[in-house]
Image (cartoon, rainbow, N blue to C red; front, top):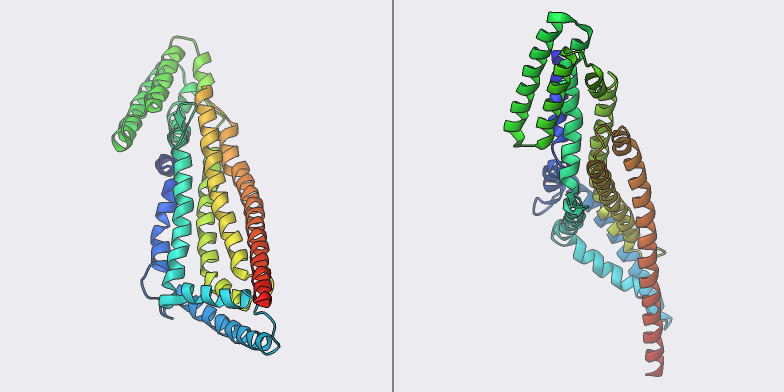
Length: 351
């Protein structure tokens, strides 16, 4: 029982943190990987940069051969064989520090947008505060229920003693978390509701008492759902790190100049993950705000929504939106570049 209570308290502490805490906990990993100044081969990103440079060298050789052939045959030089080596040279400068800075900038941009969304207000309720309070109230109520649950099986003086002890335990939990996290209305509300229900039980009115008690399996299942929510947030961060490590390979492969540049495909994947994070936090905040404003005391759908439905929906929407967005952007840029190259070619002939 002690281990169970310790676990529930630990879950409650994590539930009181908002969605920004996951990104902050990964800041050290991102900084150590992409923000260490000059990258040598002894670092993980430095090794990927060295491999990307090999790809780039091969691409430059191929591009130089094609440019020479086009020039020798009096054909206009294709712009892709000129612009991509220039882009690669810029991004690989400083042993990859420019590329690493661009990666961190993209990540910070998505985090900033995500934080702004979750901190915004809907129906007069700030989404991050609603999520924090709702997650904490679930787990805190489970603690109080555990303290009161066995009292229902007792009778007479034993029940009175049990309820008094449970009330003291509940107040102890309330004082502890109030000191740690400041005044939160739901802490006092839950304690007051159970104390009042206990008094009604002693006076022979057990209805309100049993109405407060959730099924014994519910706190465990809900805790698992919140763990799924946290796991998904950490998985997104881990996958973003892995995708970011492949950026040098994408840059090096793009220098060859054939077909669709690998860098645009890399950007599509990174943007998809960033959008998934934004969509996920938006779904969390919206659902928490709906539950809070609706005044529902025990919204059983919420944990399942944040633990199962929101990760699936956000990942699917992020993947689809990222692909469509970058397909549209690259298509537009390709059309504009082709038109510009064609115009330059005509001007060259007329000249």
